[in-house]
Amino acid sequence: MKVKLWLPIFCLFCNYVTAKQESPITAIGFASHPAVVQNYLTVVKQAYAKIGINPDFIPVSDRRSIKMLNDGQIDGLVIRAKNLLIKYPDFIIVPPMLGAAEIRLICQPELTCDKNLLDDSSKILGLVAQDEYHQELLGGKVINTYEVVDYQRMEKMFQQKKLDVMIMVFDLNTQGTPSPELNTYRLRQIEGFHIIHKRFSYLVPKLGEAIRQSLAQHTFIH
Image (cartoon, rainbow, N blue to C red; front, top):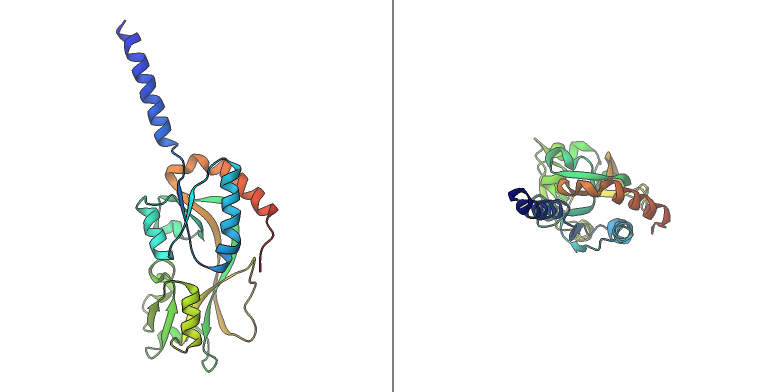
């Protein structure tokens, strides 16, 4: 008799645990980069809609979005470089790859554009999300860094000659390589994936297939 009395309570507890483990994604952060806003945001939104999930998509700066995901304030990032997982083991990627990008220095026309500029203490380097993306590159370098909230503001400062050099991300699906008129130096290439917190790992197979379908249906805006 005691077993029969406890069985319904135990089943309710099981249902509670399952529901808690498979709680839905409710908020996804995205950066203000044009390629994200015009393309990858659409792809990821459509993928979630295909599997019956409709999270809020929140514009947020690169650094803040990563902290928010790590602290559990949001559940995922529309697109980020895969190497982010090295520092944040609670993050997981959702294959397939959304796109690749080149990281480049963009220098004022009168400068010799190469990595030696990073050792020049008289120069100012503009960049977005210094701590999260470029620690390895800038370790031990003496160039003055100026962190900017978004890429549009950084480009404006560069045009106004307030920056000697800046680090830019060129999305290969939409921008290709930069114009030959620009004074640039290629640093590296990165791969971008949709990233979610590992507590939502149960979604990866279904969400990954939905992303694959959305990518196949999407026409990239250049």
